[in-house]
Length: 114
Length: 112
Image (cartoon, rainbow over all chains, first blue to last red; front, side, top):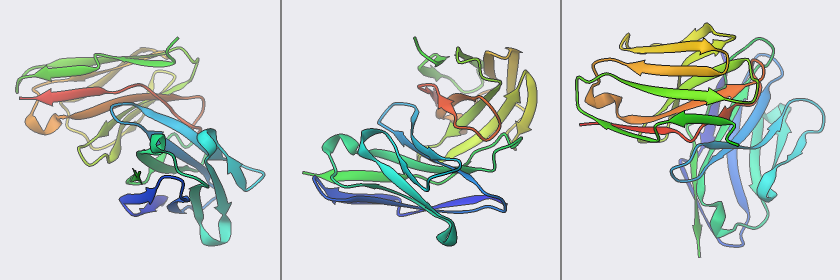
């Protein structure tokens, strides 16, 4: 069965520092992987996704993630945090094809310190 | 032009009432979903419809009933509301199974 683990329910970084949000998954087939962001009182917005091809994926707002099959990981990074990055971040996995369900991580709240 | 729109955005109601939340998508997607997000931000899928057919029906009380009049609409009707139903409900759609989902802005339901 698929599952997603996000390490750390809260991550706090200083403005300008590196952002690293961790996501590990389990899947019996090559997965599709996603990162979403949720700003306060808003819906979820897709940051980036991996389906096939290049394992380093670039997304919006300067975020990127790397699919590492050997580590079953899809960690999200940004070189320099900005105050506007403060939000909840969700990792999700699906098996694609006829599977209609995304499996979600529990979310990580990113806190930016001035 | 909003891709996935749901109404109302806020809904405050008393226990025992019946209420509906409407959702429409103009992306031409085949699959639509309802999610519940609790106070700890945990996302739980409730239902999934593909071309008006129920695909996923997770363990939710029978008081929750989805209705899909066409593939662009998926409404959620809730009977006999309880305090524990208070949450944010999100509608979403996707082009194909397992593809990325596009979310509405959410409906914050408060049962008093």
